[in-house]
Amino acid sequence: MSVFFGLDVGSSQIKVLQAEKSSQGFKLVNYSAVDLSASEEKTETIKRALHLAKIKPGTDVNLALSEADVYTRIIETPRLSEAELASSIRYEAEEYIPVPLDEVELYHQIVSDPEELVGAKTMRVLLIAVPKERIKLLTELMDEVGLIPKSLETELFSLKRIFSSPKKYQILVLFSHKTTDLMILDKGLPRFMHALPSGGLALTKTLASELALAEDQAEQYKRTYGLQAELLEGKVAGVLAPAIDEVINQINKALVYLQQQGQSRTPEQLVIAGGGAMLPGLSGYLVKKMNLEVVVGDPLERFIKDEKFKQIITSEVNPHLAIVTSLAVKDWL
Image 1 (spheres, one colour):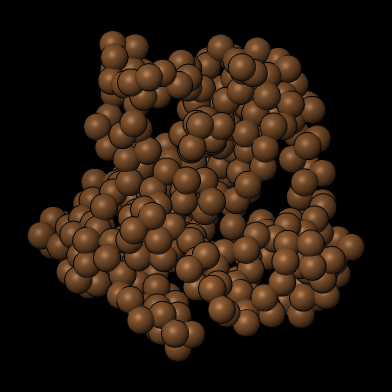
Image 2 (cartoon, helix red, strand yellow):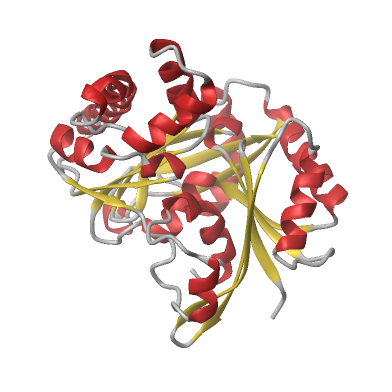
């Protein structure tokens, strides 16, 4: 079996995780996380993270792109064979992708439930267009740090791999540093995807502005008080709540859109992941506002909690490791 690992090149931190499969579950082999800083080139930060995780040059790596870096759309087309779809997909894409198609690599996947296709005249198709320039930059970055790209996907599909249920109607939300990404799944099949141009960094900046705090102090207040209205006279919660309400508003708009498209089911579960999922009080706030089960995603649930694991992973809640963990186990799920 080839040696590979997951690399999460975030906007604030580089995460590296390597795992192996056993009959009892996944075993943690190596892990590191290094903050990006203005004083160090990204390539040097990645090399440092690789060194800490004992990853050698020439190793295969699984990578993911933020939803904001790609164009995604679920469209409805006449029911076609895979061969017919492959030959016509560029004509379909021209209507939905807002840039010239010669500037992107185009991928597609049929995402209709097989049961729905029986006797149907149409089908749902997922379009993903990745700018060639973005791929070029990522490939060059991997060349500079001595790694071999094994696979590339979007972060939402990484999230889907470890948190989707084949039976439930779910909402997945990835609270990242600069963006908040949303995917709605019906029985594990994507129905809607969207990227909001605001994340944890925007919350910190808003808090700093509204409460006249230095940015590092605002970050500490956010992590300490969050949406807990009973703390600090609710001042921090009062500033942060409108931004979370906007996420809820976007989710509700997406659900209304899907209802208009014929989706009769109502969501059963909201799974939150990413560093922002650790905001104090967030899950309780979402339960109160949305009236459904809210789960803080545990990407390490299937890992064997041996002594090595406990020495490396010291926190009990790790939604911030969702993307890198999913990339690390991609060949087995």
